[in-house]
Length: 324
View (cartoon, rainbow, N blue to C red):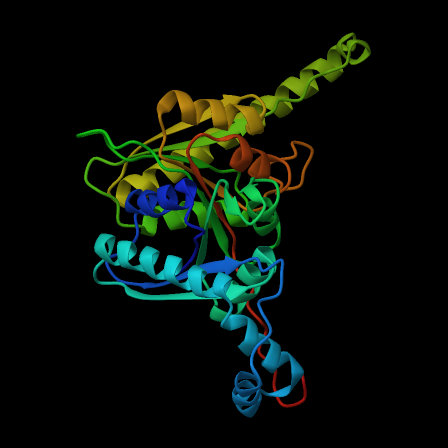
């Protein structure tokens, strides 16, 4: 497993690190902790000797600029911050291979491009943090990465540990490919003993208009459709819950009527869930189920616990020498 962790030294970033102890991570893996310095003002001009030294190893104008900016105080401080976070991560996960790095530029682009280049499996971001201009709220960097990153994204929020309180996971499903991937991810993780999972499908039933309700055949047709979908939903969640039980989790299945954006958040808070797992995109049908930018984005923004949005990476098709 390859984990890319965005870190900025804020309380939320610290909470995000601590939250990983409840993320079911394996004993071994690779982690890259990344801090991005937003350099709004240029550093002091370099001396003639420094220019010559940098130019001798730089490849072109862009390489010279990157070499110069890498030595700025903002980037140096960011690297020290990333190193501190890497040390803390190593205490939590001593068998992991851990690296850290600091870069300068746009946090959204640097994290996105690094996740692509490094082929990260999961990108960890805080719900909000600290930038050069003050606070960094979900809806800017975190929200952009939820929409654009090609790997899974976890919006991490810390939670106070309570003795003997089990890890609780809320898994939203709808039968789509990404929702299935979220279920697979939960089943594959290494959870502590007594961990609990709750598989939920939030359905929105067809409702007739006043005029439509006057037609008896239409009422019967709509009732039959709603019943058919409800039975299919029950089969889906029961199968999913069994899969998690087979993986060693205590699990239950629920089909709840309501608006997924509100129902999942409310249920997670009432049940005191540690994390909500959702597919990045779902079935774009009349129910508007789990469309990123609607359900997944809204849940990530409103939830009081961590939210992991699981995305199935698209694999490149292999071609022969003729390009077929």
